[in-house]
Amino acid sequence: TTASDTITKECLCGTDAGSLNNTDITLCEGENYNPVFPDNYTLDAGDGFIYYLHDGSPDSIGTIILETTTFPINYIPAFAGKQFFITRVVGKLLPGGGIDLTDECTDITQGVSVSWTQKPNINVILEPFYCEGNSIVLNIENVINGQLDIFINQSNPVTVNPGINAVT
Image (cartoon, rainbow, N blue to C red; front, side):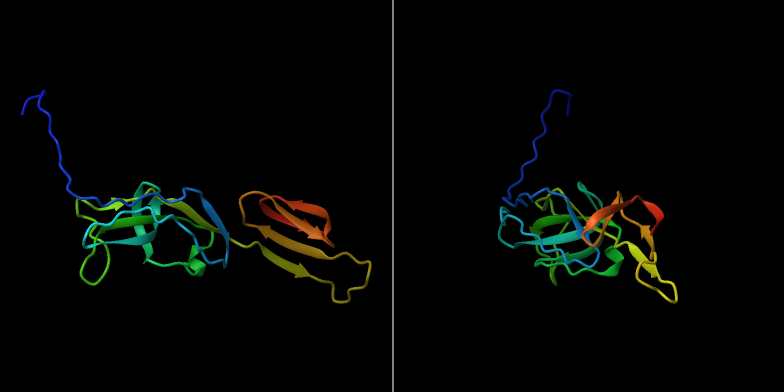
């Protein structure tokens, strides 16, 4: 070929993964992930779809953590404090399940960020003989990104910034 030749790749498939609602999701530790995605994908004969929860990036499937065709994704402790992506993959079904990622007609949505924030660790240390009017020391380790507001008697919020703080 020469520099002026045009090369055209012909794809004779209608497979289309569609799109997901690209809103990042942040869940609390322990919370299950139960998204509702639009059914805007197109399957050719012999096609199927699967959702991958994976690391990597929105545009690149790294290590697949789990795969599913139904929701919710039940929380497991290994999710805490980590960011993953959920991606819909549409393509030829493999014998025994799964999608053929090497097929030229396989289509993949952009991943949606899914993360589970860790619960702060709260440790209450009381004096052996606590009486009304005494101080209570709360040792709080703030493991979230950003501040943690604590309400005592639903008034007078106390702000705890990242790190270890004592509130009395």
